[in-house]
Every structure is written in C-alpha cells, then in structure tokens.
Image 1 (cartoon, rainbow, N blue to C red):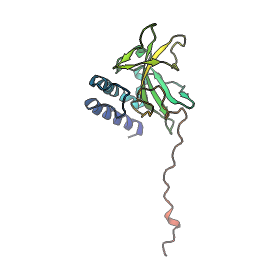
Image 2 (image 1 turned 30 degrees about the vertical axis):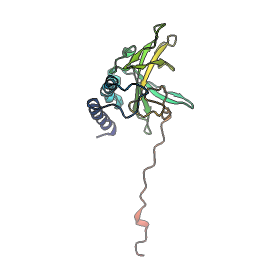
Image 3 (image 1 turned 180 degrees about the vertical axis):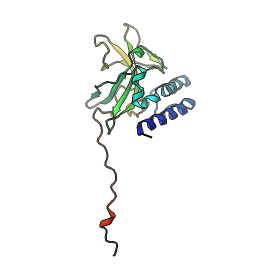
Image 4 (image 1 turned 90 degrees about the vertical axis):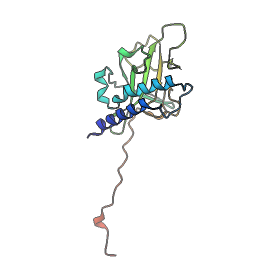
Length: 194
C-alpha cells in the first residue's frame, strides 16, 4: 500500500479512537470542560481524512500555491480554503486546512483554521470557549479590504507556542531535506580470513 493512503487510513483510525476517548495530548490555554474537548474530538473525526491530501479538493478545499511563513516566528503552511465554510464556528467545518510540504514535496496536514468576517463593533467570535484572534495574513481569495477573525487548532503537529496560536515555529515553507538512509557497508571487501 502506498504511504499516503496508509497515512490516511491510520489518521482516520486514530480520529475514530480519539472521538471515543479524551482530548488531544497538547494542553489548551484555558478551557478544560467536556464540551470543549468533545468539540476538538469532532474536529479530528471530521478532518482526519484530509491527512491524505487528494481527499481535500473534492470536498471544496482548494489547493494553493502560496505558503504562509514569517521569518523568526514560524509558519502556518499552505491554506487549503473552503470558501463555503468561511463564517462557520462549527467544529466540524473549518474554513481552511493547513498543510506543510515534507521532504518528498508531498503535503502533510498540520492544522485546521476557522475564519469569520469581522462584522463590526462587538466582541470577537468564540468556539467552545476559545476566542478568535484578528487574522493576518489572509489566505486568497478572501477580500483584503475586509477584516476577519481566525482560530487555528494545531491538531496534527505539535505547536510549542500553544494549541491555538496562529504561527507554529516548527512549520516552514521550505521542504525539509530528505534524510540519508543508513548505509550498510559492502561486506564483499572485508577480509574474513583473519
């Protein structure tokens, strides 16, 4: 079985298990109630299939060519935007899937993001007791003349800055160089006679 479908199958199995158990291992900034963690478990279950990147586009998530990275801060990755989900605060309908290029130039799912337009004065939107933050940068094709709030959830890659922080210091837009496989010495050149 090719590695990408295998990754997707494993991700779906893990998401199913997580939806029946507790919450992610990474600590959240504040909320710890059952409703909050149940929402994140639903997000895992709804997005795990996108660990296999080809499943994203048929479900409305458009594959981008641009990647968000901020020198000295980290990256967000490639924003696969589903314009129909912009404005949603439903845990199972993130507006964007964030992917990072791996050493083979394939893209791995690292996070999800909800995006809500700023409708004027008033408090920022919340989802499961977590408050959205002002959005920067905006993934295309969102109107740059409008302002938005976003909420990131680093469900598929640890973020040492926090589960809901916008930038992840371990995400880059440059694929990591492949590691060299361990080399076994050619045993034909060894003198075995002593």
